[in-house]
Image (cartoon, rainbow, N blue to C red):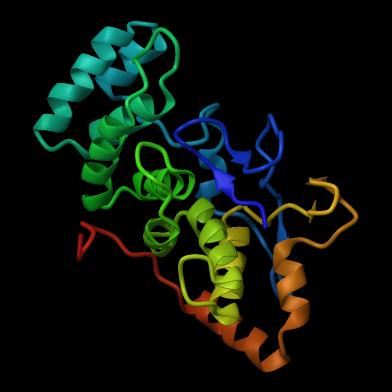
Length: 244
């Protein structure tokens, strides 16, 4: 199963060379009625795959190439508890783009954790990626599943897709196909229907079924109905993250 990688940058497929956003779909047939994608899809109009605060002073510096000023502004703002600033610092220290800031995974974890605890789902997702791929610490698949799960429950479509793959495979979390299908459906409604991928050829194969379609075909009608009911009743969490 191929997961999404965000890292504050371009959305990629883990294990496949992909240079464009792949999980966007105009409609998703998640049941008998096609579902239009939510604002999660519109968020990816940004070249870095996330919503940017166009009124943020740091973003103004960043867009104009004033990178030291942007980092300084976000550092001061994050120290005062600004969630968005903490997230952006997490992104930049995680990416380590040339000319912006030197990569520092410890600082990335620090700032992403601050933003995630304050309820920022993209930082929850990035912590999932960092734990899964061992950025700054040994890989921890259970911690990755935990953070992807948080982002999924906070309504982030990318996180819902990744968490679904882990629930289906039992990676870092107990296997639960009904919950997996629920999150595949929610991710698809948010614009991430999944990519038909051939593990044998290690490449995208448009002739193959998506992960959502494959899992749905394996489940009984009773289980599918239960997953759809859970998806329809889903309400994204908001506010500070509890228990962290």
